[in-house]
Length: 237
Ligand code: SF4
Image (cartoon, rainbow, N blue to C red; front, side, top):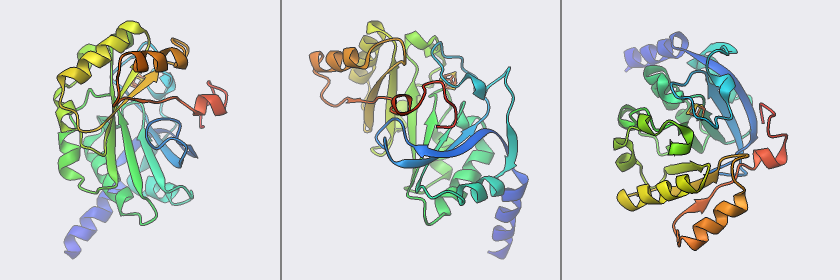
């Protein structure tokens, strides 16, 4: 037992992650919208969505810092929010490090929720298998044709989403809306589907009307309230 504890402590200091930023704000989207939340933004993403609003999270930009798991956990402890959003970039790029990070964050008694924003291009299975805490859940961003990255989706993930998870569709045009409805009609979904207007591409009201006209009774409209509260181009909010 002592040996396992020593190994875990070693991993915490040895495993490193490239980061863009860690900050506290209110969650801007999804079912936890409005809650004070600690954002941990990792560096790196294999996708290049046309409407990406965090291009500073992958090259040619560079990581702002490289921290050990222990340092990230310590930094999280300096904030007062009880919720964490692990995002990117694509945070699930770093399997071993992120599994360890999630385990340690879930052990923090003050933390009640850790949601991971993932592109849907990375297999969720190792994370679901290794991290059993009920605090940890996934928000999978299904890339529709308007993103230019639909072919990168790892579709097996959809069947793995649990009731506590979320499936988000960022919708840039009418064709995206119809594609999202088609996906929903084809999968047996246990989690909440979110429809979110691509910022600057369509008006939120337009999407709300499409949802109502289409009778999409289980879909939740999700707006990015951080872009209403602050300058849409401001980082760290
Ligand atoms: S997956 Fe996310 S971070 Fe990566 S390009 Fe798409 S929107 Fe940007």
